[in-house]
Image 1 (cartoon, rainbow, N blue to C red):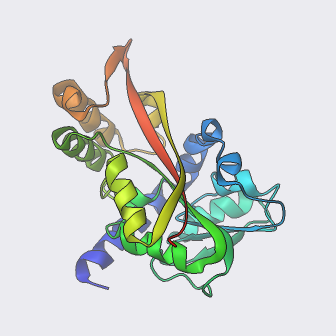
Image 2: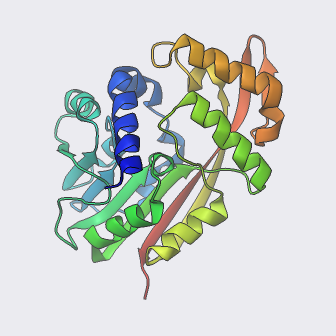
Length: 252
């Protein structure tokens, strides 16, 4: 692991250790509108693993159907929240690029709202492919950037202010290139467009006050550059959030 990789791992761990409890509460329910279980075509009794699953809010959707539901995450504090909130999950501290799993172990390997924290997305998705059975699938879910490079750059600049562990949101086209470069074919895709409030995106219990203020200032001055369609709503801001789901299988 390079020095920059170690520094980034440290940043991710520190940010999510500090905010574990509040993050879990704020993000609860954010996957409901996506209905990932139906989208993934998981069958009763199959095994599901999630990389970067944190406090379990995504993979818990699969608990009622999966024979095994397991999270692999860097941050013990996040897994501690998952243990208390969703009993029955298997929880493992692990690096996304070096999963302690045999090849062909899982029916579904997934990552949800985590790939934008990862500097080597192709390697991470390739590892998901490795641990998936030949008959299995890989599900990638993440927020996506606009297609225009200038808007994507501004959006990522904003999110780096909000969260120093952020690496990059990628455009839908770039996300498709990532999974294909990892040796996968896309079986199905869905782009979700939702409205969100800034006050829901940044809770004071989760984010330092000076960081919330810096994000507000950026939105005031440059929000229009991000392509996120920021609009005032009283003392709040409303914006557009786009999330992409890619269901994949091994390339033939």
